[in-house]
Length: 479
Ligand code: BGC
Image (cartoon, rainbow, N blue to C red; front, side, top):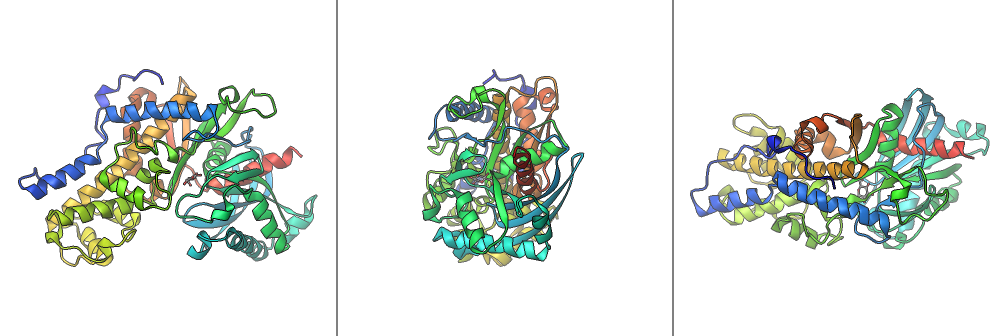
């Protein structure tokens, strides 16, 4: 990585979170130790970024490295002139969506999308049930939106679809890829090692749905491509949601493990799978709560970076820290409740409500504690302590996200003199109060204000669906 730039002046601004009074008792000391364990000062951020940078390089040179750096086989970026109607499937987070994207050229597009909730029973167990559910949703979508005519008027008599599948896939071509491992609570073991496009195509055929899947896309790659359709200076697509990950534009010559054709010149989009970074916990400052969460998760010692950042886990980290503090007598008069002791009972969305509460009495904080944790009566001090803890955990997530973005920009060697755009999507980015400001402030700390001014971190709308449709359009043109 390039030597640290002179950003000393910007030190630690984003880490500043209102702290309750100084410790006077043992319980107070335990509280302030817990709070401190979530802090990541600037030097530590830079150290993590340096390690991450070398892991990116390692992932580009060999299969099986911790950060997978998966070639997407998407070489081209959109020209903004693509047109036509394409379907997109978006599977990988809390919701599953089917979209019809009408590309209108000049960077303009319309999206019609239906959301479906995947039943928990389909998320774990035999893969056939999951893919049948998905195919059923596509069938329903085609019927509801009367798309049979679009299919009939196409050269093949079928609709063309891009499949956004937001899990680590060993991609073999733009439309083929085998699942490496599940994440985010999904676990259908018989799918691991199988081509997910085949599984989908077979499930669609069983229902005689006239759809041809021509592109398999990670949500980060989709986000990058979709944002580039409107903003050509986009160099990175990043998801900060139920899970986290980023994709970027890499020189093929740098992808030393890549042996395919065409000959390695030009660029390819790389899906980093950065969520797997430092799963050994070598440089990430894991707290006891992170370690406990990892140990009880269904993917222990995997996706550890993701577990510190993403919406699937932030609430549970908070709950564990709260339990510790109650047991130490530092909160709620030392009284535990059943929900407080229930794994995953505290959702990341509650943290957003807590952070958004600026009322003097912290009424909304009290409401969350009463409604969701069955802690009926709290003191103002309790509520202040809870809010500060939540702020610290949310701030850590924002700062680590900035570390990832910084390390990847360094890998690309940008920005030099021209501005670049980082496109971001995901529920944490969109819905967590203050997250965007904290991330941008941490980037300024890492890069220095001048360089950071050349990086525009923007919200990508509808990235994963539109991106898959765009890649489907690009692939379609090649045939
Ligand atoms: C998956 C990635 C995905 C990210 C964001 C992670 O759990 O491994 O493939 O891009 O979540 O959805």
